Length: 143
Image (cartoon, rainbow, N blue to C red; front, side):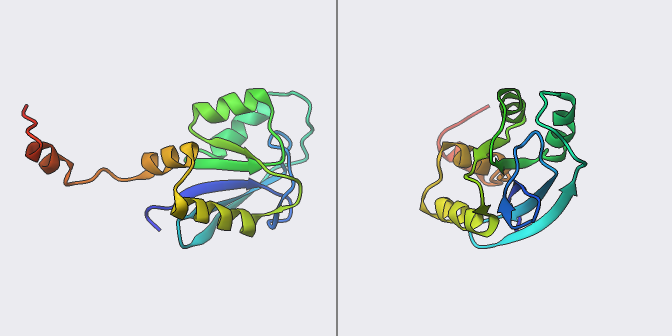
């Protein structure tokens, strides 16, 4: 799954997205490509309140480093700004959204033509094409 994107889900039961980002007790992190999905990590946190305390966000955002998106029920403005700065797309999900269904939807979007954020994430996680310099030379590029 070398072209897979890391996707996080705010969850308490590892089956549904049922947490607000800032007070999430746990995240399920998956590697997702067009045809497959694998659970990479389940990260647990203590009991957290939606209290506006910004300090707890940095730990979560650091955990999500390398993720293309985080699916959650809600996310505050400050958290959105911090996530976007790390190239992590926050995705709001209705309560009870099933992780397996969200993964299938994401895979279908990958196949059908990704949205702007997904296309950007795919391009960021792609390895450079080793033939790119040959193609540039064929197009007439010169140092």
